Length: 467
Image (cartoon, rainbow, N blue to C red; front, side):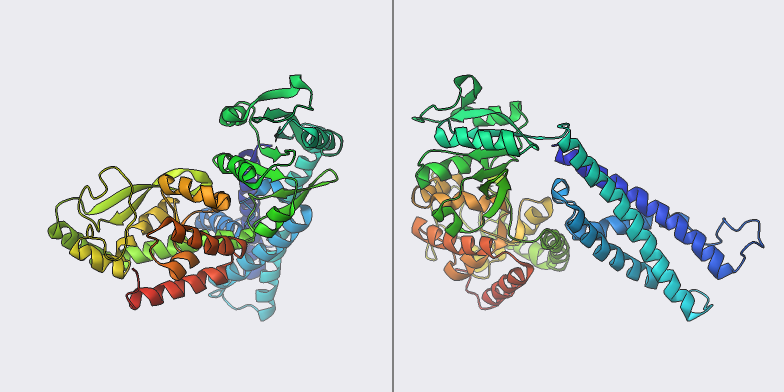
């Protein structure tokens, strides 16, 4: 199932419906306000300047629809959820447009105002929902006919993998099983001709077969083996599912989904509602832009201080691992002397002699992190989320805490519970301790918790407890 194609369908339907509503509403205003029913040959040519609305109104609608979260997983929408989200979104849009557009109108009667609001809402809700419902019905019809499906592979070749394949092929018509992927020392119970490759080439298998879902179905796997596999799969845009066991359910961050009659744990879905996730990204962008503007004098001041304090560049770029396990360059003010690591990663402490005089001030008040607002704007990071680590240390963490890969579900953050409780991590043990707070955050993601973390971070900054 092509998620991008479905997203384009929703976007196009919402734009077309918004344009139709705008035209019909302008005609309604012409008839009611001008009171020219059946008396003016130009009745269908409103006096209002409708051209700006052809751009402003659809964009306003798309913005509000985005905040409802409907564009995050358009392929997962049902008729009920679409009805509810459309009702809320169109109600908000109608109310705002009503006050923006009609408040300065010539007063005919107050009933006209209420009628205008109702007409706008009725048109926007009904037309938008009809377009969306037709798309959803079309997808379901295509699934029933076998025209739309999700390419799926099963990792494992044992008895459990064979049983899972039977479940998929008998009961889950939207999933098309492409074959099995063998792992080391795995018993072969499935037809050998259906084994399409080995796990060490999983990336090539996923790309070649356009895989959307991966089901891990091993016989008696240990937790290190399971999370080792998951750790590799997070690099790809696929949903990861496996048969639930007590440990995975207790780990958190997982939801039970059904394929046929078998329950599966899906760990690539967030506990945060889609609308909150959309608001989270909006807050990231707005706060980052405002922060960079308001703090620009401070940033310029410390740029000069860093440059004059010691030789070397003002900013320090370092590769970190972020969303979906992909690397990115994190930006910071340089707080250490040049070539402090000499090619070998080394953690820093409060009394590290490699830190420059200005660097100590920057770290104490976490000013060195301010350039990461640029990372947030680029989409590499969020305001709140687990701190990104270097690959060198992630490998050490995974040896003790293989569930680190769960953090790949979300963008890393400028701050989180881990840094608040632990501070700078100068040992791998502290990194693992911080990881436990990040797992708790992941399982309890909400906008309320994000605001709590931000306020606590501000308190730490003003008290100078950054190190």
